[in-house]
Length: 153
Image (cartoon, rainbow, N blue to C red):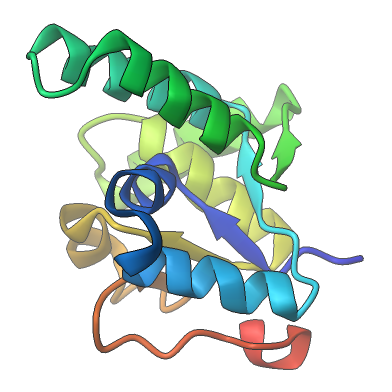
């Protein structure tokens, strides 16, 4: 199956944090029904682990809650990519787009490589790149989610 959706860590965190009531979860369920397996760089695992740790350190959630959320996230059916060549493409994209860091560029580069939409909950990232990269989508209340491979890209 060809991947048509790429997710970033903010999307996955929004889905885990907000649960079944979130627009991110609604998108996830529609993709699952359509047989779409989202992709992400392996970086996503590191970023969600760090985000959960920061929530624990700030006293917003317990360590047990963080472990439960991490388990939930790692049991999602996501196709992880770990190609070393992705880093060079991310470096170039970060420079081309004038991003303040290269982390987000990994998601952008992978989505571009796959010919996929990148779904994010990061409004700042979306605002910064969506004019140049029309395939970067911001999850939200008024968003229409693709329901099948032909609708996804």
